[in-house]
Image (tube, rainbow, N blue to C red):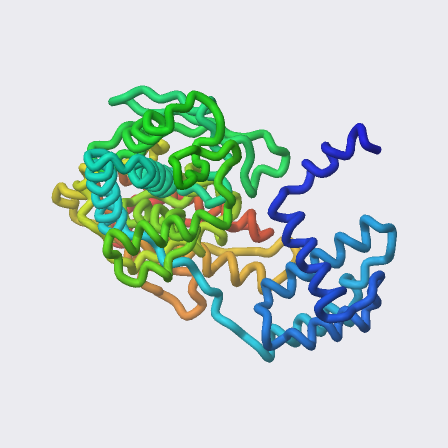
Length: 421
């Protein structure tokens, strides 16, 4: 067993191991449950914590219990009808709005980046090496995290030897694994040099200050300015960001979390015309509804000519389009029908809602029927009209497929003969 135990341990992610161990300890030690558990004891455990824990936390506790029983060869009590009904009842009696991270707006990102740059320069002039290094590291972490839409744990996995920097051009990096990369294949990411608040310059300045050629890109710094040999702990990312936000004078700095960078970038991309397919490919989301949890189209944004966007798929409009006069919108009618593979009205309803929110809302859609399957929209009548419609169809069919539905959709001019299917 000793020969392959390290590989068994590596097969499960460190965060998952910690959370599962904590959940089992809570059930067995703090609550006083016995393992192996029964369906009755599992249901009572859920009921006892129904008012204290969120439904997502309760699901995580059930996942940990299920994993323990499967690994030990016992029957899984979490799959019984009793446990499922109790969990369903808790959702009905204790509904809660999902708490989301406060997105970091581009204006706030710029303010913090400018402050960190000035503070690092001042610290260097005063001979305060430790503070200078901290500010350089935090600036690189924040800018790279924002423009790449990284999760906190992904930032801790980056290594210097996996970063290829070309000043004035950009950088290419390798991320060994991420939450959605279940096979640990890793992925390569690219970032061009930006005219302002540039992550390439920030990463280069941090690597130069660290005087390292290999090792974790972001690590701890002790009181004497010595860097740790291990990456920053994922739980330290939020305190580091909040400290920088507070020092830069950002209001309510304590409300930001590790997802604020990712959600901030998603909102920035959405406001600048990225379609959902491009955003999902760039950030690494596999499901449309996951991406939509990060996007809030109602949030205000800084005028888009203040920074150059990172590299993105060709279907994403350039920033220059945002500051030129928009063509007169072409009035179109979208009509579609959904048929579920499984006759599930819930999946069909979810697909319809996502199509409305993802594909139609950005074009000022107005409902044209009671059932919500016909809408009037406006798309600029320019050279990109055909491409915009093709992208809309692509997103609509992907949403339908993800929700086990067939889709039939038609777009036609309200005043004209053109028609797209």
